[in-house]
Image (cartoon, rainbow, N blue to C red; front, side, top):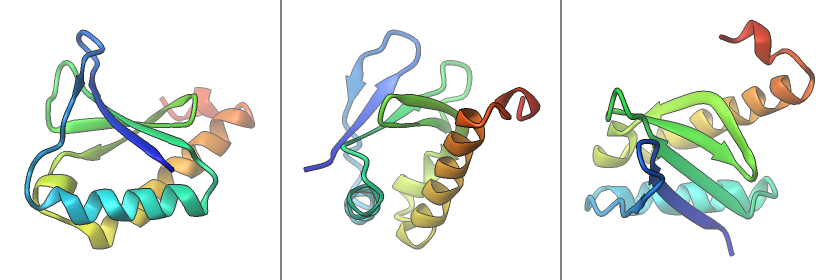
Length: 102
């Protein structure tokens, strides 16, 4: 079973994504993670901009974020594409290209 967490960068505390429209998006995140072999997906709320959620796939915190509105507006049709981009950022980092992404 895939574990999906939301945490605050400020203090590391976990919080719940309880918006009513988020349920479908979370289910799509879970399906995507299972299909791509990730047991853990964490979204970190940016300390300076609460509208950004930085993506962590497994143990890798990435230089890639998705907007909170993806969850609050129930944009389930875009979350798979956004996670594919995040996975691409993870692969770039593993290949040593992350220094060019900043």
